[in-house]
Each structure stands twice: as structure tokens, then as C-alpha cells.
Length: 279
Image 1 (cartoon, rainbow, N blue to C red):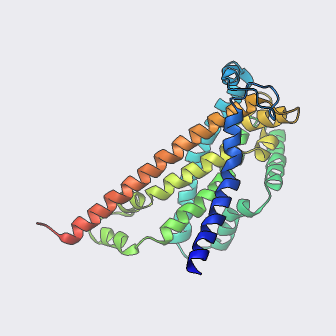
Image 2 (cartoon, rainbow, N blue to C red):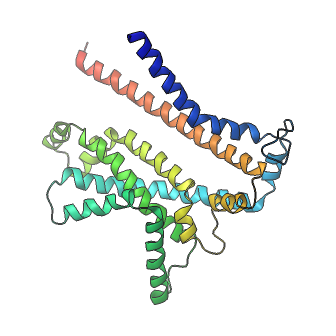
Image 3 (tube, rainbow, N blue to C red):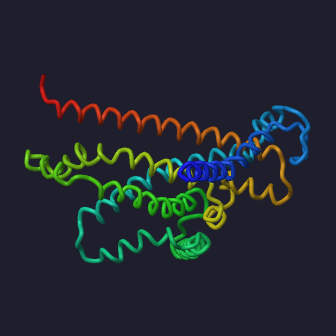
């Protein structure tokens, strides 16, 4: 029975991986399809990648998406860390429940509602103040709102697992609160910060709903370009740009995983050396 359960679990796990990754593999393969009809195989070719290199609209959208995603990830990590630190380290302060609810609200609300609310607010601000114009800035603000909520959850989970005695020991040795955060807390949550950065970067890079509400003339992200072209019929050039994004994200994830594993091994070696004591 144990053997049957073992292979049954592995079978279901294998089916889950096939369900998740087979469409991605098919997309990558068909990006080399020589036929202009996506469902018909016509041999291997690189012409769609060559066409992508000359597609100014797609390249402009890709560059804009990467730029917005980078700034979104950086801003989300900073704001999310501050929010998580406030919720974990300060258990009681006036308005804490409201603050926690507002931080978590974008996680449970449909993106359509969030995008429409932001659009109405920005239109009202533009009418009364003349600022901001819908474009790159407004897209970044929308992505930042969503990314901060995800970053807060990731960093908060790590902060709750930290041993407070380490920070207390640093303060007993004369370190100021800012020094404790920079020298003790920040290195211990560095892995969660990296995870939050990658998560928010990916969320911003492939966001369609918020970008559709908040974009303006001259500010069209790559997902919006792909979505507008897909409505007119699929093209192998879309498979090519998707493959490029998959490769870039895969490289980032592999590099981050290697870095996290290296830091964890280094931390284990330092801990073992500290337990052995001086030789």
C-alpha cells in the first residue's frame, strides 16, 4: 500500500508539472515555427525573432514594461518592508487594524475594481490640479499599490519568524535602533526582500488590467501590445517575444535561487563555526 501511495503521489505531481509547463514548452517550440499559422508546423526558423528585432512597437512596449517593473519592484520592497516592520514590531498603535486592512485590501479586491478606482481618482486629480497625466507615472502608481501589498505579506512572514533576542542583544551592546535594523534585521530578511522583489517585478511585467485602465497616449506596455494583437489573430511573433520574456525571467529566478542557496550555506557554516567555538 505504501508503494502504491508513493507512485500515485508522484504520478499526480508529474501530471501537475505537465499541466503547468507543457503549454510554456509548446509556446517556446512554436516560436521557431516557419509557418505563419500558429497551429500548423512548417519547420524550424528564426525569422520571427528577426522580425521582433525590427518591431519598434513591441520593443518600445517591452522596454517600458521592464522599466516600470523595475521601479515597481524597488518601490514595493521599500514600502512593503516599512509596512511589514510597523505591523510586526509595533503590535499596538492607533489605527493599526485600519492600516493592516488597507495594506491587504489590494490582495482580495478584483483588479478591475482597483483599476477603476484609481482611474476615477486620477481623473479627478487631473481635473482639479492638472496632474498627473495618464501614462508611465500612473501605471507605475497602480502597479506600486498592488506590489506593495504582496511585498508586505512576504516580508511580514519573515519578520515574524525572527528571533527577537538577536535584536535585543544588539541593543544591549549599544546599537541604536537604526543600526540594529541595518546590521542585524536587514541581513536576516535579505532573502525575503529578494523574493518580494522578484515577485513584484513579475506581477508588474505581465499586468494587463491595471495597465489598461491607467495607460495613456504614448505609454503602452508590452502586455497591452500583445493583447491588442492577439484579438486580431495569433502570430508567431507573439510566441517569440513571450519566449524572450520566459528566458529573462528564468535567468533571474535561477540566479536568485543560487544566491539564496549560497547565502543559506554560508549562514549554516558560520553557525556551525560559532557553535564549535575558537580552536
